[in-house]
Image 1 (tube, rainbow, N blue to C red):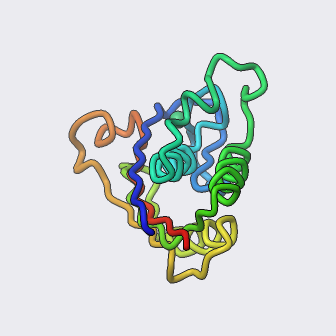
Image 2 (cartoon, rainbow, N blue to C red):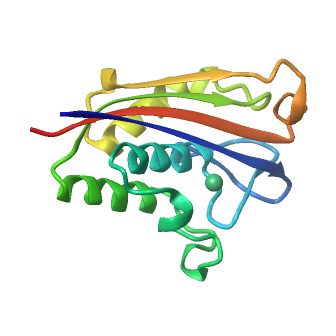
Length: 158
Ligand code: MG
């Protein structure tokens, strides 16, 4: 049996924050603002995994009012969500994602992020695809006020 899930997230860019995307620290003058480390990629991926398994959303699982998740490493959300899926017999087949960022330029780090996410998910690199787009200088993303991410995942069980 197969199930598909979709995830989306957006966070604002601001000063005095590290930029964390897909679990990687990326050199940039600004970072994403949020309750946790504001990693839009891992948040959208968490939502896609939860959605595929019919388990609600990241806001239910990890409320942004909970002090346990203040500035927390979002890899925790992935690890715990994968465990929930595995308990129910699901495994991840593949992940496809698009990051929307006017800055920084993500072309140079796409392959590194892909390998990093594949390792995090226990998948081969060819089962994870990372795409990057600018906002064509329009809207909040195009003005470099925010970064967004869309993720689609396929999961399967016997
Ligand atoms: Mg988020």
